[in-house]
Image (cartoon, rainbow, N blue to C red; front, side, top):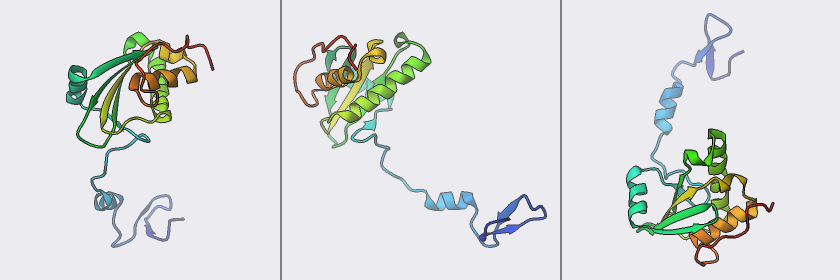
Length: 158
């Protein structure tokens, strides 16, 4: 009933580690190491309050459709992105949907390395068509078009 690497206890239901084998916590400690931050295909999440504050204080603001993007150049090669989705966007379900759509939209475009971006969503992000949302993000980040932010569509396309 137990795996080859474990020993039966008095009960047939419970199995313990084999004599001399490492417990799962010891294995976890042994295998633990410091790793690079989790990436989201091309960018790393911006999490620290001080980093958000620096972007808000010194960044360049561009608005396009339902998103505003504040960007600032950094010294490192990593692109970091923070999302701001306030309660004005809607219920928790709407806010989570907006964040998922923004993350996926940011993966669909090519962000310039070495920049921190804060993306601020409005209610329009929840209901905008996919192509419209990606176009808003491209223009607001300057990812592929490099143009200044201007409205693209009314958010009703597919």
